[in-house]
Length: 460
Image 1 (cartoon, rainbow, N blue to C red):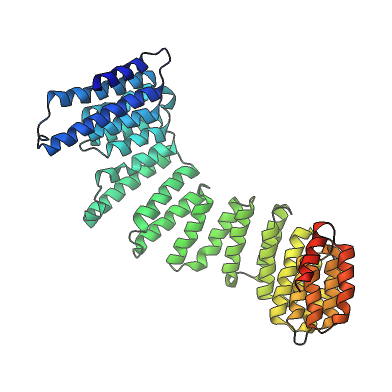
Image 2 (spheres, rainbow, N blue to C red; image 1 turned 90 degrees about the vertical axis):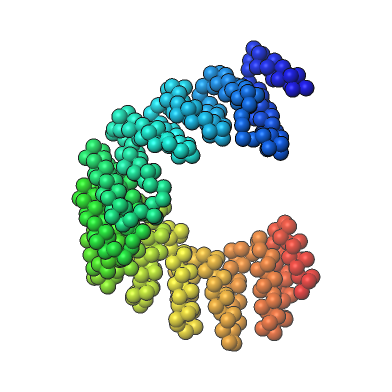
């Protein structure tokens, strides 16, 4: 049966068009066969000594992989399967040659740094492979000296040599950190880009600062790095945010404005940049004059189109609510010529705020003025109805006006709204109006909504 199976697999490999799956099935068969043999040997207590048959099967699997890789040279998964098999049988010689052979088989990936680094992870699975790992790291600087990732991986290779980092003495750690720092700075001399600084700063914060956050001297070093990167205009937006975080950790909040000035002078074209900047201004508003903050909002809105600036308008509106609520209505009047997408959410937000902070007379004056002078949203009218219904006792006349107004907009397609109006009339003890509302609803509602209304009304 064994010979027959092998003959079948060999026949598959002799076809004019050989498929990768044919090799994989054959290889899996041989690997499973070897696993079964090993299991029997363990049961019989024969696992200490390898026999000629053991070597024959292993060599057969090696040859099958090599035949497959000659046919499918560019198949990375097949190479990795071969290396995994070699690892399982502790064939270090195969693993040692794998990197150079794989690069030869993948000439189009010779400039792929991540591809090379994948071998480092594989070599870490084996003992005594430091020289192979070092060869890969060295090849990065030889072949890609102008790539940020080359210097990043090369600088941090020191950590590969110390897998038990936490067991090292303090002075040993400091020596390694200093060496990595020197390598990053060498990289910056060759490739001074924002990405290179990003690698450097991320490493220093994550591997040096975070493990010992109470060490203020390391935080001070970090501040110096931020200053240098910013002066060269190579500091990313994320790292500006980290700079502010470090200042907060050091209790140097009073210097945040100078950092924010640098940030917005460099990043002032995107919505998220302005949003971050203005949010930070409001966080530290005690350090600024109100006129300065107002002017910065103007700058932001000038830089951004109406389509993307909604969140900036809303942020400014919330600032007004928190610091100068008496001016909010004037602000809304000033904004009345803006697009509905900007104005309507602010109208609804102010109605919500005024309902919590003012009496019903003030609330009514606000919403009646808006209804008379501008096109408010249906959501705004629903809010007005909810506020009026919470009054004790409710003002029936005001509520009727609001219901009639919102039904004039949405009455053709909202059976639920008509039912809500009818329920309200019942609650007010005004049953004489219900029949009028019912017939009005039947005349107004269209199609399925009409039938839906009749069914809902029957359940009352």
